[in-house]
Image (cartoon, rainbow, N blue to C red; front, top):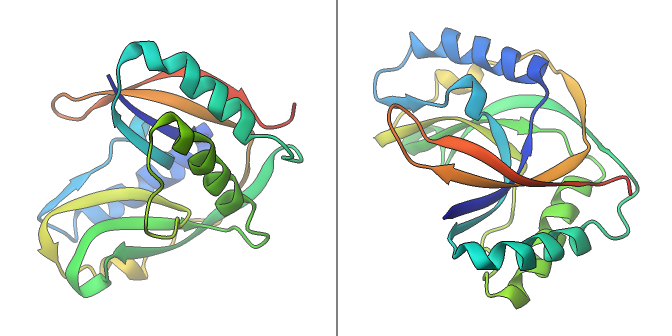
Length: 182
């Protein structure tokens, strides 16, 4: 099974991002846009995993929430692109993380999963929500000037998701949710 650890978004945040996607879609031609229901914050991508490893993953994620002081406040920020607006592969919206709590949570998740055989990401984790992926690198400079309404919300849990690849888009199934306020 193909797994990742992520954060599901509140409906009003997904609605705001879906509206932004609708606006931006008319200004671009070679993007694969993320469907509203698939919008999420990826914390750690695990890849193909045998089903019998799921309990150990959930246990590791439960440990990763240790010392968390409850929900993590955040808000939608500006748009950007990886690796750069002129050579974009991914169009995204940033998440506000002034105290670094989202980044600290992502680091704890990766640290907790490493003993279970999931290597840590070499690049620094950046809190962002993917809106589109470019089939070939393109100039997204005009797209990165758009800004969603700065909806504030709280990250209350992390979720272990199963991703089932399919057309027109993958389907994400929550396998377990780990609350941050316990």
